Image 1 (cartoon, rainbow, N blue to C red):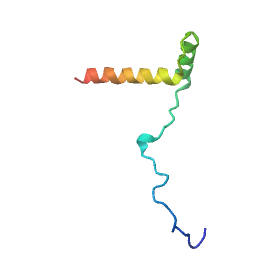
Image 2 (image 1 turned 120 degrees about the horizontal axis):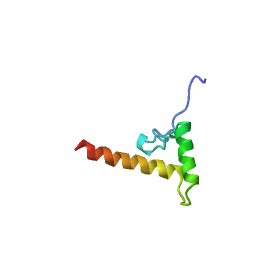
Image 3 (image 1 turned 90 degrees about the horizontal axis):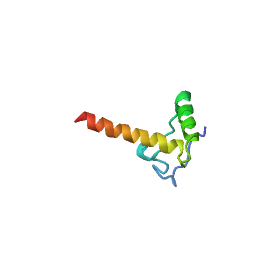
Image 4 (image 1 turned 180 degrees about the vertical axis):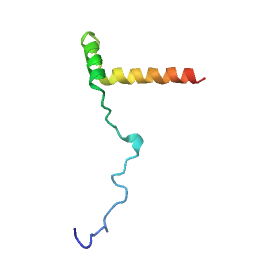
Length: 69
């Protein structure tokens, strides 16, 4: 490392991103992933694994909200 660094033109927080803006990868278990891929192969609809998983999570959130009341 250098003894000194010149930060005169530095911009604080230039690369900062709030956690809400980050896309965090979520890894599925092998069994879960293969289950959904098999189900998708049998369908003619244009669904992606991402869309299906998000749909299921949204449905689960709605069920949880209903059970909470």
